[in-house]
Length: 581
Image (cartoon, rainbow, N blue to C red; front, side, top):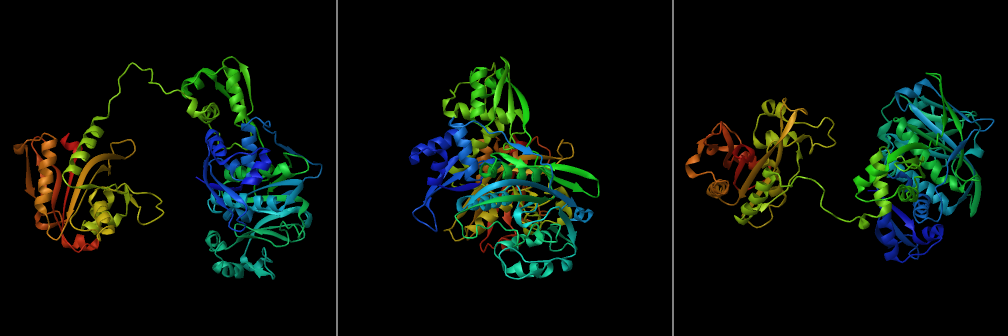
């Protein structure tokens, strides 16, 4: 969840109210956010900062304007505003060249006229950009934002992608001009910008936005030009016309970002909550788009069904009032349904269930009376989970400590580290198509590597170390609709100065007794073909009436211990609980 840092006094000033810390914490709870921490500002300790956790999809709450506006509406102090995009007689145009299609094919633009910019408002603009960049923009890979002083520019604008050697401009807060390829080298040592260089560095062309005089606005997603920056010039307040642009690889996210920027900052413009429409022309397709759209959608919800889902009994008028408090202006169509207006600030509302959730929030989760579901059936625990819980308790009583390891692991964990042949094992693994790290490439097929990694991380603990885990593994199965299935396994390891095979064998006997498998109904068979175990010290576990083995146990091969950096011998057990049950 994103955390927004808001100066307490500024927030209370915008709310036109004052709260104690406890009162504001309760207000946040009622609204569906959380006051995470109260601290002093790092630069000025006299300023109290409220750190508020907000839902990741509530982009309208990423700045003080959004939070204060939403809370004021929730408290009933103001009505939800109506956002408009006004078409001027002479529209500012941005021409998109075909060359951009290979690098960042989309751009969205908008204008706010007569914006009153103060130090606090300037900081809010910067903070909102950064929060959006790290959230929906995914560190500028999907969308990169630029805000410019329109008075310094001469439209129309051109968005193109040019060779880096042909791009020269003075970047933001620098004193000299750089060529684009030189700029990429220059920012290699910049702690903030170096994380974004990889997005376009290897591209033969770089995206660039210029005005009609050739002035560079931005080289997205890296840096804006210095000439067009928003600058108070030492004044406490300045009235400015702001030009917003966002280049993107995802047009849907770009429109969300533009709508959020415009709606949040439009309260500071000369005409509140009004933006000036702009035109984007794509040369390669001949398409012309008017932006920002600031579209308000309408959705009908059924009162009876909503009451049923939430577990309350609200009248249509009460439900309409509740939704309006959440920023969703509503009206009763008839006694059975409500028409809900979804403003451009609420891109998180994509389904009726999102509106139903807002009804529950406005009503108050703490006001919903808990009651047993009205159903003719009697619930009971899933049998496999019930047995699992009972086994966990009894295995722990046998002197083993329970571990909970990651469901994802590396292919190496499932192959080389436990001496299995990759050519045989890898095709049977349920692999992640686009893993972000080598540690999480595939779903685990066995629990033993996870337990050995746990011992590796805790090998400084006093011996013996006896661990167990009862969890699911994932097996490839073409018969299943999704191509794979889960299987409940129990694994245990004993790590000590001696192998401790008898300890693992004793645990197996205890488990079989708990599962009411008689002594004569299970036995061990040698499994010298399993390279994970030391030759002559591994065995298959077989149960009468069950085809094949239901598990294996033995002393791990020294090479396996060495792969996990373990200096003492180790015995292990793994069984398939579902085969026994």
